[in-house]
Amino acid sequence: MGKIKKREIISFIDKELYDNMPEFQLITKTVRLKKLQEVIENTIEFVKKSLEEGKTIEIRGFGVFKKVKRKGKKGRKVKTGEIVNFSDYFDVKFKTSKQFKQEINKKR
Image 1 (cartoon, rainbow, N blue to C red):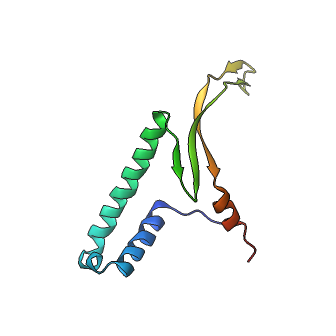
Image 2 (tube, rainbow, N blue to C red):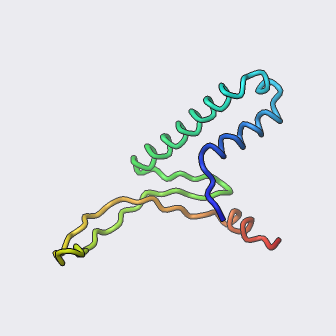
Image 3 (spheres, rainbow, N blue to C red):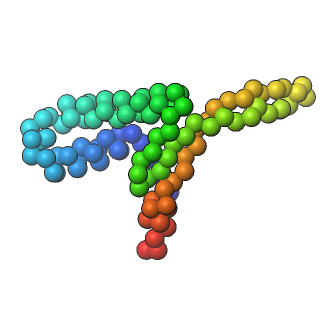
């Protein structure tokens, strides 16, 4: 198992658009990749801002992103043994859709 990076997603989308949209082929690869990168980054920013506002992001057939509040915890500094209180914080929870779970668990 490995990681998929943003540039790999951009290359995948570029290839799909290039193969399926003749007008997309008229644009140079450098310009296409730059524009696709902007689209991906703007999409990520939109998701972040929506979650900051407390909105839930639902992508049918994929899953749901939701902002959740986590309780603060007590910890201890290793060197000094001093007890440290960590305040409450927000995290993002992702729940996969039933359809997506079924697709990734298909026996091959």
